[in-house]
Length: 319
Ligand code: ADP
Image (cartoon, rainbow, N blue to C red; front, side):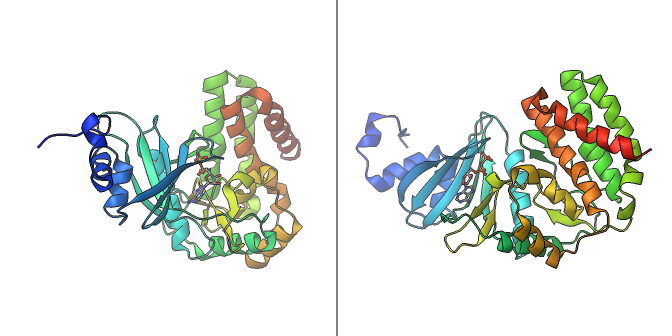
């Protein structure tokens, strides 16, 4: 058979249906949409802004709309981890998250990958903080893990690797795979031995600082809950996106609260579902520290001061 490439002159003379078929042969996203996705026509594609890491596109087809993210620089594992997180949250049947549909490589001979998911039409309302708090609490409450703290796959927080090996004890998990991992990365990247040394002293004191947490149960966390990852659908229901999921202590979910704009209505509704544990206020900065350290790793020493002052304040009390 004659191979007609989308760039060839022969391509232009084919019928629209045939052209789409030819394009799908060299485009795995179109290939999925016209196969499992059930589309026979692509009505429109349009870029979606707002993302930090990947290129986002809306595909409107005669079988409905799809949301596609693609990234030329990473293999499929990043999107496979995102899909695993979205599926896990979806399975709780609580807060709305987009259903992932397909992850794959962009081509067989180069790097690059894509994820296709349900397209959610977003509404314009600012979002109902009470509903967000309640439904997030429901997600935490509905989830349970028989394997302890961690997740089935490693993922990324921003573009930093986030390791999730299953661990029986929360303090060990948080010490080694959250704070400890970021501190090591800061040392390796910036040679910041002072912050690293202080951080090590903090890690030694975690059992004292987190002493109320002996019986903490693992909950499924979104893991990167800031305002950029929270939206509202056209019915006004909250939607959470772009997760870095793992099973952890529920309070760790508020580690990005300094970029989330959660108000009193949010926390009131949340704590009605997931009651506040003793010592909550004493731990909030520890959970923020993980994300401040990550911001230092991602964006540089502008975040060093915040990291240092949190560590210093805990070292001052835990003697
Ligand atoms: P990135 O991983 O590159 O940061 P995001 O997952 O944050 O990208 O997505 C970028 C933007 O696309 C979001 O801010 C949101 O507005 C929009 N978006 C994300 N997922 C969907 C979806 N399933 N349906 C519709 N819009 C979405």
